[in-house]
Structure formats: C-alpha cells, structure tokens
Image (cartoon, rainbow, N blue to C red):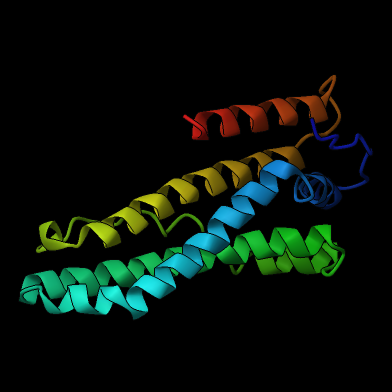
Length: 179
C-alpha cells in the first residue's frame, strides 16, 4: 500500500497540494493517469481515422448527433487530461502550489457530463458510444478524486487520522471502479 504521509500543513492550500502531491505519485493515480491519456489518444485516432468513415454513413440527424457527441467527448477528455496533468505537475514540483490553485480554476469538471439526448443519437457508431461511455466513467472517477481533494483542504485537524480517512476513501473508489 502506498504511504501518503502525514505532514501537518499550515494552510488549506498546502493541505490540498500535500494530499494530491502524495496521491499523484501513487500506483492508483498512475493507473487513472494512464487510462486518461490512453483514452485521449484512442479517441484522437478514432476520430481522425475510422470515425470519419463512420460519420459519412449517417443521415443528417445522425451526422449532427455525431458532431455534437464528438465535440462533447473531446471537450470532456481535454478537461480531464488538464486535471490529471495539473496533479502530476504539482507532484513533480514543476508547478508551485499557488500556480496550481490558479490553474485549477480554469478546469471545469462539472459541466462536461453526458449532456442532453440528441436527435439521431441512436445512429451513433458503437465505437464512438464506447469512447463516450468510458470517458464518462473516467469523469466520475476524477470528480470523486477532486471532491476528496476539496474535502481534504477543509480538514482542520479535528480528525484523528485524516490521511487514513483519505486512503480509505481512495480504496473505496478504486475498488468500485474495478467491478
């Protein structure tokens, strides 16, 4: 099991960065990071290759649904990749704590979910649908991690073992994602 450390930070910002810096060097984070970056690459390859051919077979409504869903997918993946890269940069010491907090405000994880149903959405190719589903699963995992980080920043020391609490939450998240 990864040791996340128990340094007592001076401010909430340091708490946020301290926890994430330790988590971002863990095996669990590396798995999420690799999954996210692989999904970005796989999506780009699909949209630039077979996806173009798949889109040509759709009628007008299907083509609009394909274009809309492709844009949602790429936007979602870029926001997720930005979040993952930010966490990795902090843990590697490439980004200061203050800069990380500023950069995080540019990442909007809340508005990149599934969106509304689309007319012609039933025509979407299975390959695109699979990429969308996998991106939404990754999005939920990152949202939970982000929420844990935000909760961690609010801890004031009243907890008997805040690090242990966070490790337990991480184990729950990754256990649930393996099912």
